[in-house]
Image (tube, rainbow, N blue to C red):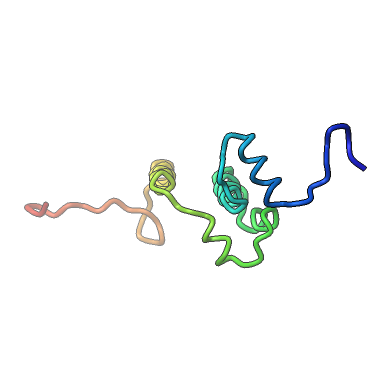
Length: 107
């Protein structure tokens, strides 16, 4: 059953090419968008397990090929670490953070 003006897809390749052209993104592959979906899910805070189920990835290794880490991601990770350390109280030597004291004459 098709709606008015909607035709069944006879050729996936033709339908995909026409859809991309109409969307203004010619010559894109399905996997180009799959990678975008993976990155967007991970940046949105979705767990790897949930993202894999949504994108249909069966193995972590294949999922990680799509989960590209960019310089901006690393900068954000460093910012998170700095914020964590700024909130963490300084404690003694028992598994806690203690500032390193500089020795006299050592730079």
